[in-house]
Image 1: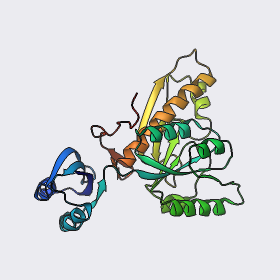
Image 2 (image 1 turned 120 degrees about the vertical axis):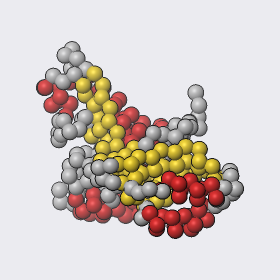
Image 3 (image 1 turned 180 degrees about the vertical axis):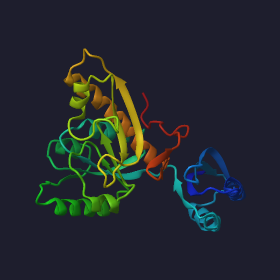
Amino acid sequence: MSKYCLTVTCPSRRGIVAAISGFLAEKGCNITDSAQYDDINTDRFFTRLSLESQAGTEQADLERDFAAIAEKFDMEWGFHAEDEKMKVLIMVSRYGHCLTDLLYRSQIGTLPIEVVGVISNHLDYQKLVVNNDIPFHYVNVTKDNKLEAEAKLLSLVEESGAELVVLARYMQILSDELCQKMSGRIINIHHSFLPSFKGANPYKQAFDKGVKLIGATSHYVTADLDEGPIIEQETTRVTHAQSIQDYVSFGREVESSVLARAVHAHARRRVFQNGAKTVVFPASPGSYSAERMG
């Protein structure tokens, strides 16, 4: 029995849900999980449905026949096979905690991605990546070759078929042109609970201010540094007794989990951009199940 998810966003109006559910029932599909949101501020409707094709209707047939409904309601939409893993390129510099966490989660199956390559401006994690049978690409970046380095990145995206680029503590600022060209397809982890403590050394900034909560933020990359639509955030408590080294250590744990959750949400098609914000639906039952249990 084929399993798919259907994602839809469109202007809000009466009859959308009825049209979708009626179409799926007619095609012999059973809805197993659904989430929807109607934003009264932007007048936009968002929904994600998990479904089983009990009548054996193929994805191509669903797409062909749904097009008329999509046109009627001016929808941005897509059918996606639930067992299809999203192809991802990971970029990293000299801090490897997010990289190793993503690799582990993808290997055991809790993260529905296929890592098709790792790009780095350093060689620190070359052996780790190669030992995981993943292509490693060393792309040195200087102020003089930034355009060439970004051209190489785009060529690797095209060659690998990557649908998403993940900045796993990649410590280089991407150009406005690249951000615009790959809008909605680059996710970053910022080691701060945005909008507080932007820029360099956020943990030191937090330490100097004596904060009691530190955290991390994962967001889509835009031309505005650290201003992209937020996907996931988390905080952890600290006290006056912690050192700056403690802040960094606690922060690394939060960064890894926040980035993994953001990538999971994107790969499962649960994130919808809504202007400067996002709509993030809860995970469907079983979507975190691991291929290797224990």
